[in-house]
Amino acid sequence: MENQSTYKPSILEKLNKKEWVQHYRPSREPYINSYVEKLRQDIKEEISRHHRFQRNNLNKHERKALMRLHDNKNIIIKPAHKGGATVILNTENYITEAIRQLSNTEYYRKVAKDYTPDHENQIKQCINKLVDNGDLGKLPKATDSRAQIFYMLPKVHKPNNPGRPVVSSINSHMEKLSAYMDQFLRPLAEKLLPHIKDTTDLIKRLPENCILATLDVSSLYTNIDTNEGLTIVEDEFEKAGRNNPSAKTLACLLEKVLKGILYTSKRLSKKRYLIL
Picture 1 (cartoon, rainbow, N blue to C red):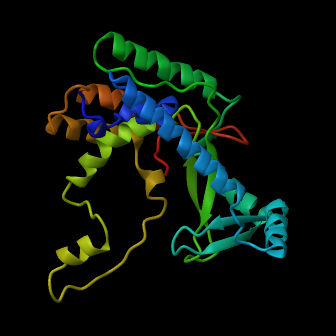
Picture 2 (cartoon, one colour; picture 1 turned 30 degrees about the vertical axis):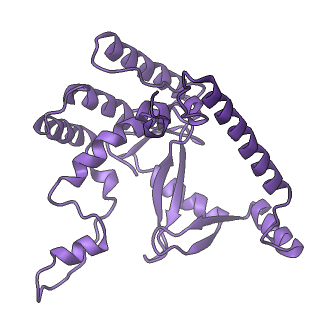
């Protein structure tokens, strides 16, 4: 009998939201399947019972105050870019800062319409071609995607508190493909000499009696050329001896991720630079 406890869902299963519900591989033994089904039902009932009697951690007045803040269109509440603080911003100032950044034609351009459906189809065609050629296994594709959302995290440690631009790809045409690429890019980055895992890793590398200095790079990610970045990544994949999928295939998919970014609202498109 197959050992059920050793089964682990693949990255493709994790990417496909339909597979998140169940990672149990049915057994050939009927009594095991019956036990699993009964256990699943008991867990559902326990979760339902727990939610029914769950107490709110806020009292009535605190809950009302929180809802008033949530519904107040004159303010925007965001976490600070660094430090973990909660920041309350004037909506008008927040929009002014967003317009200031997005009006920079060196990095952004307006588009006539929302091209998300077109980009979604382009990604599907690219994946289908790679699968048909045997260069890629079956990969979950995005459907009914929404445009990516642009927002900013305030830099409270800097004068005038400029915003750190971020693009959310949740439920967009990029979400699953980005997650798929991340499993290959993350190990690659961790093997590079300049990679610093965390503060402890940095401290271990510092020689005795060293002098520490800081510097600030303006718009670091925004100023990284996409084409140069793609070339470097493909070279690193080649050095790592990547196959199945090959370095060329991964570079092709990464290009779709980096060059298919659209923002909602004013329908803006990123030009040829990276963004967080």
